[in-house]
Length: 258
Image 1 (cartoon, rainbow, N blue to C red):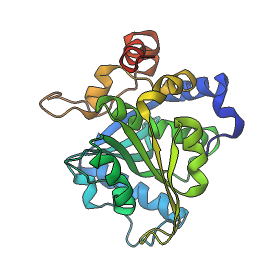
Image 2 (image 1 turned 90 degrees about the vertical axis):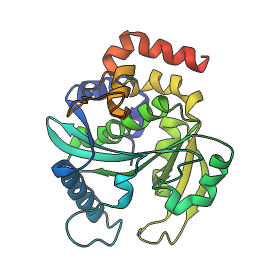
Image 3 (image 1 turned 180 degrees about the vertical axis):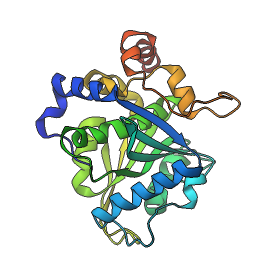
C-alpha cells in the first residue's frame, strides 16, 4: 500500500478520511455469499498485480475459518471495495497469515508471552480510483487498530512488499524485523516483516489519524463472540467521530499512561 505523498500528515487529509468514513460500513464475514464476494475481490485484486499464481475466480483458504481469524469487508456507499483478515495470535494459538512465511521470527515474540495482531489477505478493488483509492488503505486497516485495543495486543505485525514498508513505518511507527525475504513460495514477490509496538504508538496515531479511534461498543460488535454479542448486526457503522468527542479517546490515554 502507498500513502498519499506528503499529504498524509496534514489535517486536511485527516478530515477527508473522516468524511469518507461517514460513507463506510464494516461487515464481519463468517461465510455464505459475503465470503464468496470477499474471495472474488481478493482474486481480482491479486490477479491485477500478479501477486500469486491463481486459478478459478476466487481466493479462499483454511485460515479464513480459523477460530482466531476475523474477515472483514469494507463497504463504501454499500459497495464492497476492500477486505482484510485479522488474526488474534497468542502463545497458545499461533495460526496467522504472516506465520506461514515468518514463523521463526514471530515465534520469538510468542515465546516471550506476547499477544499479537496480524493483518493478512488485504485486498482493494482495483477499479476504485482517485481520492477514494488513496484513502482505502487507511479505511481498510481501521479494524486492525481496533483489534490491537480490543485484544490488548503487545505488537502488531505487518508482512508486506519491501516498497510498502515506508507507509507502515510512517503511519504506525513500525520497525523492520526482516528487511527482505525472497522466494516466498506462492507469492510472486519479496517480503518484509515489520512490527509495531502498538501500546506506545496509539496516542500519536490518533492525533494524526482520528479515523482509527473507536468506541468500546463498536469494538465489541466487531470482535465479540456470540456470548458477548448474541445479536450482532449485519453491518457495523464506525464510531470514530463519537470517540473523538467522548470517553473512548480519554480511556485510551489513561490505559496507556499518556
